[in-house]
Length: 119
Image (cartoon, rainbow, N blue to C red):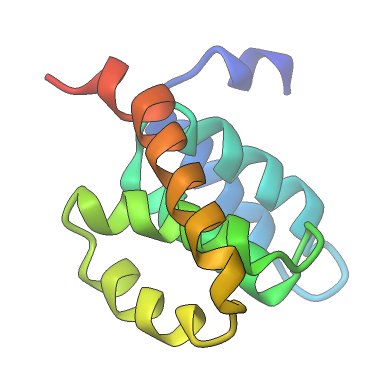
């Protein structure tokens, strides 16, 4: 799997999908989350969306609506309509005092994981 870490964000995303969609006995949400994160950190919006959903649902990672919001927001900023729709849904689950934290985190992630890969 180390070789896959050197692959494209699309390949890493597909690995995440493979682990997420596998049959019941071989499904591995932890591996899926790790591969989505590798891909998301390279600016791939589909992976950012999936990682946001995994945080929101607590699949392969601890349930964390602030993290979910941050990843969904940067995916939405890059044009993901699904992520935009989910933002409204999960924003209602975040206490108002954490909304600022979620916005700050999304700005940080955007600058760190999107801007360097923008063409």
